Amino acid sequence: MARLDGVVRDTLARTGVPGMSVAVVYRDRVAYLKGFGVRRAGSPGAVGPDTLFQLASLSKPLASTVVAAVAGQRGVAWDDPVVEHDPGFALADPWVTRHVTLADLFAHRSGLPDHAGDLLEDLGYRRGYILRHLRDEPLAPFRATYAYTNFGFTAAALAVARARGVTWAELSARTLYEPLGMTATTSRFAAYRRAPDRAVTHVRVGGRWEAGPVRDPQAQSPAGGAASTARDLAAWMRLQLGGGVFDGRRVVGRAELARTHLPHIVSAPPRAPYGRAGFYGLGWNVDYDELGRLRLGHSGAFELGAATAVTLLPSEGLGIVALTNGQPVGAPETVTTTFLDLAQHGRPTVDWPAFFGKVFAGMEERARAGTDYARPPADAAPARRPAAYTGTYANGYYGPLTVTREGGGLVMRLGPHGVRRFPLRHHAGDTFAFETRGENASGLSGVRFAAGTGGAITRVTVESLDRTGLGTFTRR
Image 1 (cartoon, helix red, strand yellow):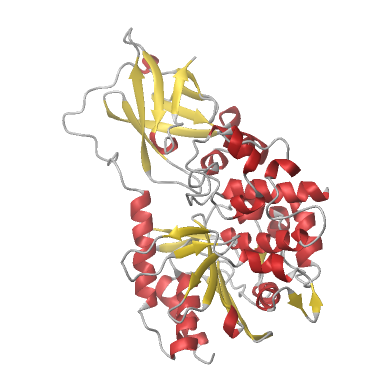
Image 2: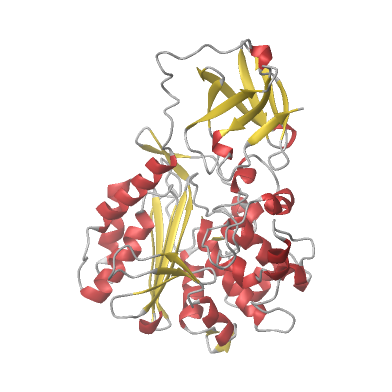
């Protein structure tokens, strides 16, 4: 414990992340609770134990705790089909629609593709539209494929709230936040925005950390929209490590909570004959260390400026959470993993700052891999006249795409009422490029126009939207 201050300060110094708040729980007491750095780069407001951070996907194990509490009551169970509580829910396969359960969606084993619906959120669509269009997504084999899906997870959580006749934010507050005295924690983005002691999100621009665009995750609140403090999350870790008991009171049923800690799908197959597999439970990454001890964890990440991590070692009654206000570069994971190494081995067994730095740099590089649209080929064919491309193109999933001529160039508009505007730059022939934006931005991406049998442009494919084959738009 005495070395943790140094670990945090070294991590902030290496990464430049503006601020971090950390809590450690050991044997049902809060053993460590501190804030470091500032809430906003260049401003004097210090981070403390009660500074409110966006949790990103650390919201998921919070949400599974809420559902575990409700599942211990009458009328809701982990194995309930989602349509039992939300008759309007549907996926592409009618059989899967009838059988997919709350547990299936909380374990990311429904067959929905990775991050299904997230690109619709980036384009400005609201929750209702996104959830309705999950039925358009192609499905992988049911209960045999792991794929991380924020909106599948959200659909299951909202079905539970619907069964209780309340909103998700109300259910979370009544079931978990209020009983544990988590007075600052909220599942409403508006409450985070109003909080005076709030960590502002940051992104790196030219090697410097700057306050970035605010990420509004309300559409996927159960999966990524909660906000909390290190103090509040210390109470939640005590509940988790106490098997659902907090301050001598049972808040969550032991069996229902324990089920969230079990493997429900293989999320990371072993890479070597003697390697260990990784699993996903219900809102938790579930792993086992070299001694066979259960290890629970989850990270949260907003590319637009937040990164969080929690790790629990239940057999030792030990847990640590780290919250940061910088885009994901491995800072919270470095702190939590280094601390667990110190606790178990007395020393770091790996240079964790260097390790996680490479991991996150590699993830960013892979996200931007593909055609280099910044450099048109030397023998690039010319484009047609602008009028050949302008018009409206239809798509049942993404809605209409319009191309207009503005200021001598072409502009593509997407999203409800064309809310997202993307200038196009010519690359080669009938291919253009645009700069992606939003949480899932991947740099420059292609826009490929195609002609029909008559030679006129009849369709267009947006490369960044075509991950599951849904990115082609047809001219009206």
